[in-house]
Image (cartoon, rainbow, N blue to C red):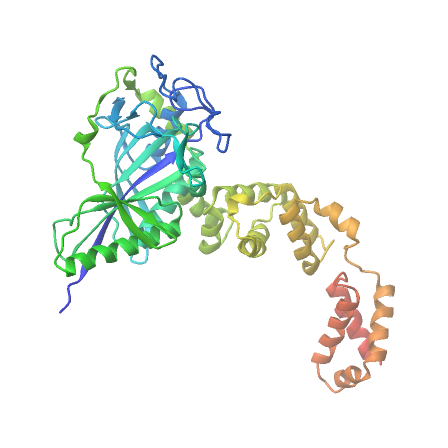
Length: 479
């Protein structure tokens, strides 16, 4: 009988914080500047330069820690983590080992088997390293220090996850929570959220953990899921062949769907940590924590319950709308302007989601003005345009953020209710389709639907369906 294995997974998630300046200097944190233009003596590690802590970094770390049900170390320190690498200009990184700002928290995820708590071992503040650019043409590596000193929090989970699905649910929960707090945009493609996966396998029922490996270079949820599957299978194959898993850091190559060893895993002692002599301890009093707690926004779980209760939305709709803070904000601002939550939800749930899928975009990329969406909802409600036309108008509003009132007027899309004009169109259709008249007289109701459809087509969808139905019925009965 073949052995059954269980996967044990813990994550180290690095999140770049949304401060305007770096953690220990006044340089810009903006993404995408020309290489080495967002730098100064502090973040390039020049001798004699001294770091000064950015207070906003502490505020964001506290906000995330409180949202993740963490305990707060009210007296915390910074440490130097010593290692030598070209993108690390000081030859050490300022981080927190001994007294991280947050510890012993948890977040709850939804799984197929029900809700599950994932423990958070700690959250600590640290600075990011620079970035190496490998120039294959010149056969050399160049370093860009723009990212050096960008503030990070590292969220270290307990090894509580057992599958790729649980890992993705945890990461989505973290991303959503942090985006709601405004602490980071969490864009994986820009590196503002990065996850390292610590993974081991063991026989089902075993109490001891297996030997773990750490996987880096994971910049999308799909890559993370593939890497977990690939590494799990690699470790099981080794164990089945009677070989040992080596504790090491591995780099995942998503194109090849395989990983390769980078280096044997260092222990904390290898980094020769010691308290940073240039930075005083951070003392966080009760009043500071209370101020941060008071400013905490309504998070997704609370919004989900409120949308169902206050707006009467189905749980599924409320879950989709609150799964992105940007989408939730758009929904709420539009509802304030038009007072029709179910209508706004319907437009976002159907047409907006369809267009996002077609364009391969995320909800955060919607640039539609809530005033324009509210005007469109009102125009449909007041029967200024019918739903068929409204879908075309919505696409223009979604894609180009046009003013729907001006768009409808310029295109002549308002509903036609002129009974005289409609009657002449219907009579012409009846003249051309005597069989439909005969079928209707014979009791075939479908004949009326055919005439209505022909009329709407002739009017290019701009006729009022109620008026058309009434006129078609009257004119058929008169014949």
